[in-house]
Image 1 (cartoon, rainbow, N blue to C red):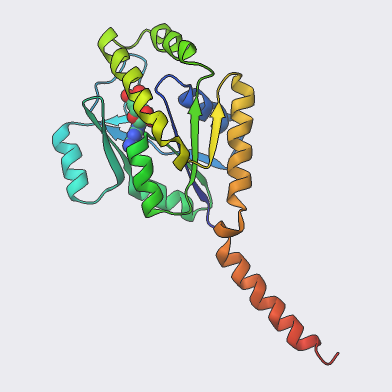
Image 2 (cartoon, rainbow, N blue to C red):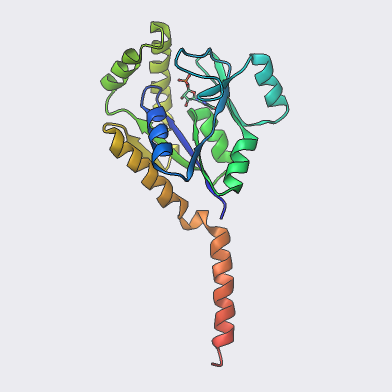
Length: 211
Ligand code: 5GP
């Protein structure tokens, strides 16, 4: 059976990255798509692990060649999801995770209506501010921008299937896992399987009519 596609969005600093890492460690069925970005690499990041760090020219070329499933601008930089990896992994039966912001998420949902949409938030605005400052990786300006983005992104939450409040990491990881496994089996996402089950049932009924 083909795998699933899940979009995980949420405020920068909500802990999406940590949740994704834990999910990959705990369960074999998940793979995380690695995005391309024009944003400068942070000290702890490695090219090809957190992101593929590329120039704006390279990014534009990928867009022109239709190599990205979606792309969007976020705080002065471009981010995009390589299409081939996502398609290959789904075909191999994997549950693919995209950790992307809201504009890109909307594009994915339009192109892939079966995508499962999850939004991660911190338990409060104060916790968000503390996490962004505590991370120590962004300038005051970048933090201001990220907080501003959060107040814009909160208006998009209703487009998502589930809200995960990241208060306790373990609970948040299990909530994301449970949501994906439940949503995967929503009848609307299993139309091909249900069609064949219905056909087989009709067949059986016909054969047993005069039994
Ligand atoms: P950061 O710079 O903190 O790593 O990421 C900034 C935002 O960009 C986060 O909300 C992250 O989820 C989002 N993002 C990362 N990769 C992609 C991508 O490929 N496409 C889109 N649309 N957003 C992305």
